[in-house]
Structures are given as C-alpha cells and as structure tokens.
Image (cartoon, rainbow, N blue to C red; front, side, top):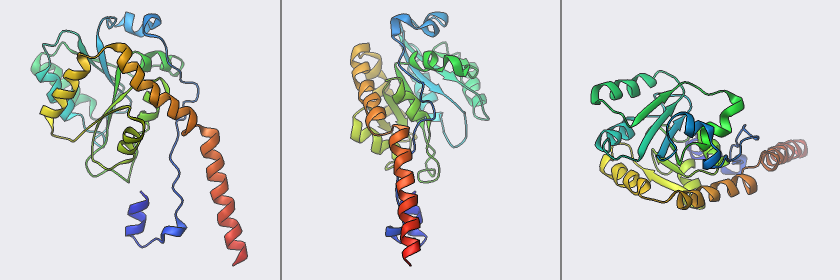
Amino acid sequence: MAQRLRNQGAHARTIVTIPPWSPDEELAPVPRAANSFRALHDLVDATVVMYSGNHSPSNPLTTLLDSAVVLKDVPNLRFVFIGNGTAKQQVEEYVTAHSLTNILTLPYQPQSSLSTSLSAADVHLVSLGANMAGIIHPCKVYGAMAVGRPIIYFGPSPSHVTSILEAQHNGWSIGHGDVPGAVAVLSQIAATRHDTLDSMGQRGRSAMDSIYRPTLLCAAVAEAIESGLSARSIH
C-alpha cells in the first residue's frame, strides 16, 4: 500500500507503515481432542484445510477447487468452506459438477464459537486476488494465526501475507493457476503429522503475541499521529 502511494507521488517521509491487527482478541487455540466442531462434522481423523470468511471475487478460490478435484480420492484430506458471499456458489457448483465428497460447505459460525470452528482446521486457506495486493488485506490471516494454525496462501507475491509467511515460516505461498504446485503442497500437508503442523502454527501465534498485538499497534498509531501533529505545529 505504501508503494502505491509512492507511485502516486507521496513522499516517503510522509508515510508511516503499521501492520493491521486482528479484531478477534479473544481467539485462542482449542485442542484437537477437545474440539466439538471436528466431532460434529466427522473431521476427527481428517486433515482439514479450511476457508472461513467472506467468499468474494477479491479472494479467488479456483486454484484450490481445481486441486480439490485432483485430490478427491485422498481419504484423509477434507476441505471445509465456512461463510457466504457471491463466490460461495462457485464452491457449491464444483461439489455438484465433480461429485466431491471431500468438500464440506457451512454457513457463518456464531462469534461465540469462533475459536472452536477456526481451531478445527489443521491449515487455513488465505486468498488474495492477483491485482489486489496493496488495495485490500485478507484479515483472516490473523484469525488463523490467533488459533495457532499454519496458512496456505493463494495470491500475488510480494504482498503483506507473503511478508508474514517469510518472516514467521508459518505456511506456504502459491500463485493463482498453479494447480500442480497446489496439489504438491496439499499432498505434503495431508502426509504431515498434526503435531508438525501445530509447530508451524505456533510460530504464527507467537507473532500475534509479540508483533500484532492490538495494544502495541494502537500505541504505534497514536505515536505516528502525535509525531505528525508535532511536526505540523513546528511549521
């Protein structure tokens, strides 16, 4: 986003870059063995890749859906889509057209049970449209990190999401249209022990506590505003 402003002529010294943070401060990991969502939806023995949130054209899912078709006979791999939006129809059409039993679609879950539903995933999917970097930022990345789950990201690079993944080593980045690459990563995930995935996710959770904590970032915003007002008063 800062680069877009610089491209429009903004001077670098007038820009302060502060990462966004999760509005879900109460989110916390729910242990797999105690997760009622996994039990309710017959996911206890599965490796769950979850997309949870708004299904929007700005967050394309085609590459993942094409990969789910290729991987439909992998017995322990399940794809769970929670939420709604104009792009949810595409998910349902894939399920019908390809007779997919490895995909589960559900409506939005109550806020009160969000920790449980998000923790039901072994890996969270985050998607960003090819031309959307620097315009929008998918906040679901923070929900995934808050519950200690790694991320598989579909979208352009560089982006703020790839910056997080590269710094925290808590996930994978795949370009839109790269179905072979996505299939390879998803096959690797399906063959990976849950505790290994949890270790990756814990790196994201640690970053939430040390870098993306609201109190820290709100203070940075306040400091930037005070600094700007102070500089203005001098002039």
